[in-house]
Length: 258
Image (cartoon, rainbow, N blue to C red; front, side, top):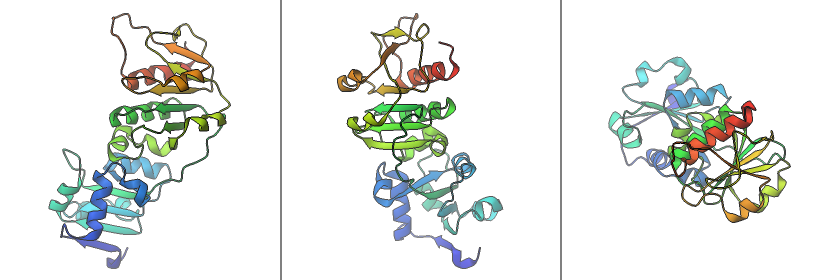
């Protein structure tokens, strides 16, 4: 890497810094930019491990002289930010001092027979990211987010996903009719009806539909379901957090222990 490949920024008025700050702090800026910001060693390593080639590597000025070569030579271009600018960029309580800008992956077509998770207006970024982690861990390689679901590539969802994004086929903004492409059974979760998961025979591959934190799965999506499943709660709680329910359901399908 030559000196011409390194851009040092010291002013908050720099247009490239402003564009980067929008990516880091605006939940939907990635859609217009076609680029995604990922911050920190763990996420960046996860991206590289999946073959992602960053278009830009960004470092704080104090960390740049100490950055391992694997970071400093990863991208064609490098940006070094004054430490005060980095603090204004990072959304982390303890800024990680480095990050990547990557191209937003193209939206793939729905794979008809691939084990899938359908997100129906799941609102909380932490829940969405946690569900992506469970999907990746338990072999559900396709996630279809219906319109109204939190932005899958928003900074908060990416942080909560802890690298799961890079091993999944992600489809967002989908219409209900697009689910017609699926050729696998669709299962919905419910807190009050259906078979208990510990005694049900779960098909695999399948598509698990997980609904809005307060309203659950929509009536229209329920009508498409092959099976309605509920989770026994002997402790007496009314319902489970959607991310916790997702982990239980996906694990049951993957392990065949139900």
